[in-house]
Length: 208
Image (tube, rainbow, N blue to C red; front, side):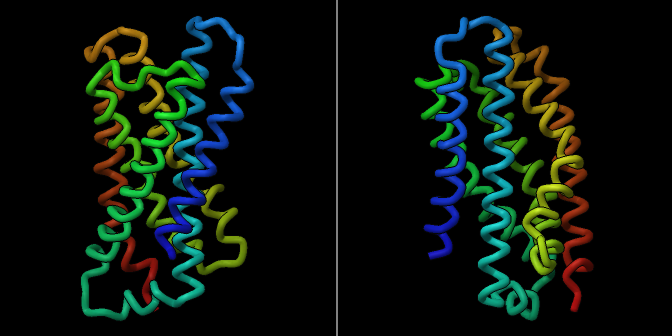
């Protein structure tokens, strides 16, 4: 049931965003401004789909006391963090695949023109969720936690958003991998830093 709820809420939200953006840009010329807008719109859709998934997972865990029971097991909290990160990442990747398939005809976006685009998407997803899982575990138990997660996650993931849009723009416009590598490096630094924070702080934020 939780799996069905997650994929339904994340998938429907992302696809509705693409449809709305697609209708909004219908008839516009395929110039540089259009391409930049499409790339930014896709990453905005991805970011909000991730927030929807994190909030739904946190709400489900809170209602069923699943997370509290999980933390009582004799496991390293870092392992619990990694399991939650990987499981959420799987659903975000599935949602992103649906989003891209819908964006190809509606937004005239060729995602598969560069193989490196897949690595950029995966690294950006990890960067968003590495902090998202950590913050969701802290805000999920508070009143208004869904709004708090959005407010807390957006500012700290701005570097991931900028790096993701910069890398995909460089690859999609034909500038080549050489121009995209600085952005890919920034994504790698953000992933490493956010993962380290999650592994170190997840247990402390959920003590008691």
